[in-house]
Length: 144
Image (spheres, rainbow, N blue to C red):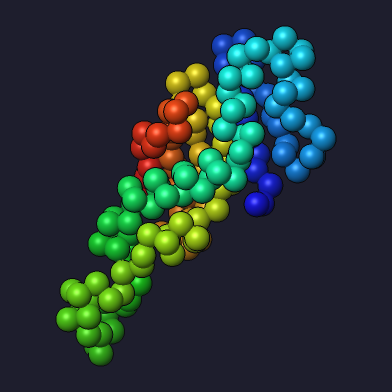
């Protein structure tokens, strides 16, 4: 998994940054400084890879139809384009391809949700994917 920037935001702190590239630093050490609210928020990062995997599945399910309908993998101006193949969905990408294409870039822990920003892997012309999750890790919203 690539390095991810993580920000924790709450009423008592402006911004607290954790860089997970430094393997010795952990969320647990933050609780030693009296930041008990952070302890609850750290849970997703105990298994960051699992959280990221499940998040990608949820985002793909939410955005796959939009991707295939409005960001096609074919050139509409191609005079040799087989429109029957287009209508049959032969140019559509799969959820699995979608999941593999996106990369987690940033996480912001907010009071009411977990905000994640993903690199789109050029699925949407280089735009970022913005997603938010509740603290049960359920997708609340995903958009470009």
